[in-house]
Amino acid sequence: MSSQETPLISILIPTFNRKLYISECIYSALGQDFENFEIVIVDNCSDDGSWEVCKQIAGVYPKVRLFRNECNIGPVKNWIRCAELARGKYSKILFSDDCLRVDCLSEMVNELRNESIGFVFSGALIGSNRLASNATYINPSFRLTTADSYIDGVLNGNFPFSPGAVLLRTVDLRNNLSDFFLTSTPQPFDMHGAGPDVLLLFKTADNYEYVAHIPKPLVYFRSHSESFTISNKDDLVQQGYISAISYYLKFTRRERAWYRYVSCKWLRTVVCFKRIPDPPSFLRKYEGTGVPLETLRLMYEVIMQCFFRVFGKRRSYV
Image 1 (cartoon, rainbow, N blue to C red):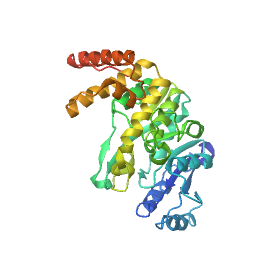
Image 2: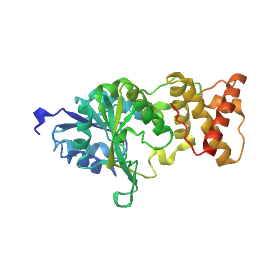
Image 3: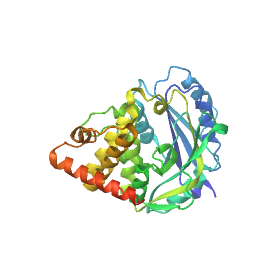
Image 4: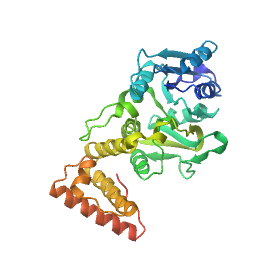
């Protein structure tokens, strides 16, 4: 199929100090068997030689559009700048320590020809190198799911929520990616991205009937000590996700979904850490107020969760 018959896809590579990995990342994007794409790289003021590597590659390949921030604006604002610079109808975020399989774009783009599908996500390889990686989120039993089922699957740990495994429309990326949410517990969302990533997909899914799944690993996520999710300083990743997901469920979804989510987390704390959390304090951590009525509702949901688990049933969140 010629490029004139296919929409332009923007591969967005936000990068900061990834000299060891950036060239492999870019070449995996350049090697796509889908022809009509551009690569937008925004360097967030790297000082380790990443910029020089990017300039060398961009000087050879016209598909690469290279930009550099005057100062480091934080990771999420850099994602947003990539989205602003994208020219394509569709966008594929590619983090600069990750790689794409050669058929990633060609496999994904076909799903989005259906206007009722909000985005498509694939399985992923995760590991320190491709040969030592494990395939995750491979579920051949379905190719299409509702937005509610996708969100429920993420909360149950069955579906990915990293935008690195997703192709979506550029307009949705621009509209739904934010680095700030009015959570009751302030979080530095703009500095780590734990929260903005999952809410980008939740908010996009809410606007469509379906989400599509390709049950094969089309992306490779590299695990290494410099990755924020691995280093996880001061437990910011977990705290970010707790606040963002709780905020979304309580103020965007039905209140029932929020109570079910918090009750599951409360039970998990009891089982994993062998302690009973103080309900009001626990509720406040999850965007609640901790008032007596809220505490009573939490305890009711905890009892219901126990009932369903005894009988081997799973409750949906949404």
